[in-house]
Image (cartoon, rainbow, N blue to C red):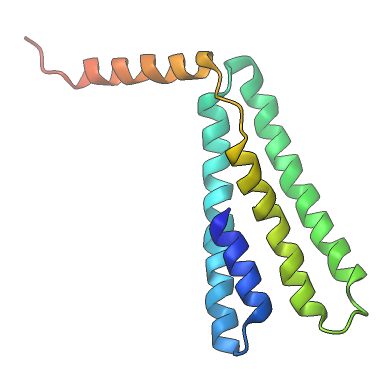
Length: 130
């Protein structure tokens, strides 16, 4: 979230091409981490009966985000300095994710219990036979 917001905003104001490339890499790292960690977090912390549809909901949100990025590009096509405004708009999803993370509801106890029982089973498997 934070790397996405900072990278997008710094990309919008970067005066040199090399700086733009560095900040784009920062955005890529943020998006890559979110794409990898969000489904993992959803699958581990949500109750088993909700984990699948929450995972699907994440994938749908990614597809809607891609669609919105195309719409934003088409909308800003005739605006002077449009590439800078496109980067500013790219910071909005990361800002939204940061705000949601602050006000996020606690994970379900059922999800935490699943993690705790899985950890106990792993510890039992690792202990040498006595």
